[in-house]
Image (cartoon, rainbow, N blue to C red; front, side):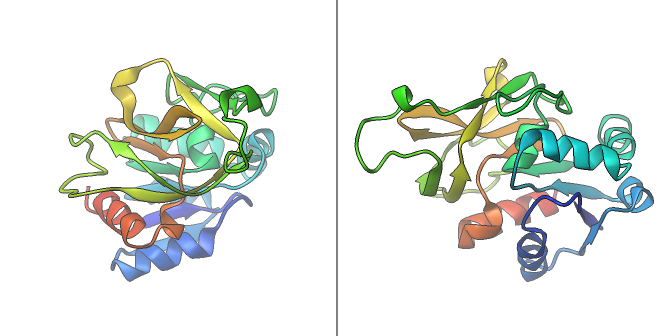
Length: 206
């Protein structure tokens, strides 16, 4: 059973609907027992970094989430804010993240972007992702990979070997991180039609 974490931040219904379209058994839950028993986890998210970490703590999800991922090695996929929460910290807030990746979350700066009307903050819309063909999220992928983004912050990784995909918006940035059973994507696969469906199918079939 794939468990989509409900911590009050994210398009939970959209993720659930996409998983059901690919035939993946899934549910939405904020129950720590259900989280601990999951065969896979999805950490979605839309909103502020500190609020996301606070909500996880207030709902008693931090300990079972860390135990499932770090001790039980349950595969986990972070989406948008979810991948940012997997980093050590964010320029958006003052609190600590989960620290699963050797990475920090930083803000797009106006100086990084061309001074034209097409490049505004937040980065919003479809963008092509250059992916590592060895990535398990992109297993069997053929042709382009286009995904829908909505974000003002992005992940800066200390370890290039964990970068499974990049995109460009004024500057190149991390679109996907992957280490062992821990995965994170800055884009929204649940809003990315057939591309997102294929990526979630690859995750579900790990």
